[in-house]
Length: 119
Image (cartoon, rainbow, N blue to C red; front, side):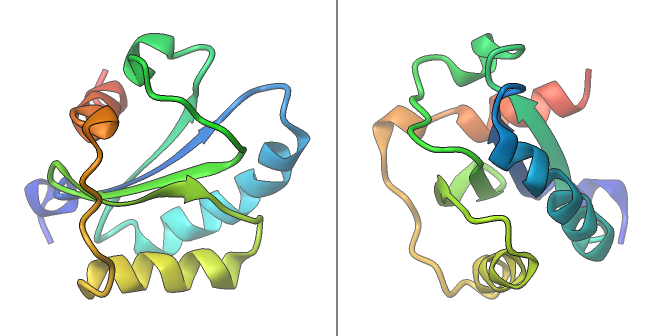
C-alpha cells in the first residue's frame, strides 16, 4: 500500500496533556497505530497545543477518537482506554459499518488534523 492510500484513512486521538486517562490511552493508541498503520495515518493531537486545528470544535470528554475516510467523518467521540474496543471501532469504520457523521461543526476537522500530521 502506498502513502497516498494510507492517507485516505485518518485515526486521531484528541487529548490534553493534563488528562490522566489520555496518558493511559497513549500505549493503546500506539498499539493501534502499529496494527492499522499500513491502512491509516494515526495522529495524536493535544487540543491545547493545537488549538487552531480544533477551530471551534468542542471536545467534551477525553480521550476522543476521530476516524475519517478522506474528509468523510465516520466516528467522533470519547473512548475508553481498551484496545479491543478501539480495534472493533476502527474495523467497523473501515468495513463501512458506521454511518457517515453529518455534523457541520466537524466540517474540515479531518483535513486540519491531516495537515497537522504533515508539518
